[in-house]
Length: 99
Image 1 (cartoon, helix red, strand yellow):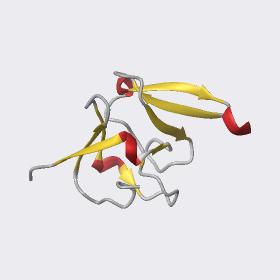
Image 2 (cartoon, rainbow, N blue to C red):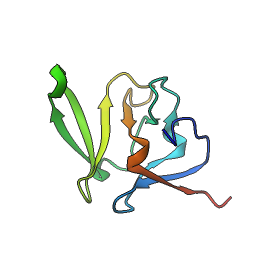
Image 3 (tube, rainbow, N blue to C red):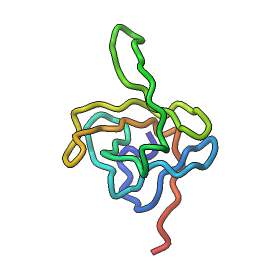
């Protein structure tokens, strides 16, 4: 996806409503093919929903402001959270840092 290999500094926002969701400082290369983050800007920005589709049990993550599907979160990420927010590029827009 568009942001999978991006190293641009800034804030990733919900493409539907513009809500700031992730900082580029928490983005990492998970090797999954999706942009991955180890922490959202705030837990209150994310809605967590149990997803048992396709014979798997996962946790879906949605924008808490507008309900748009963002991706999934897994517990195999790096420290300090050990979480991997696996996010669809099409669900994000990037506001670049001006520095």
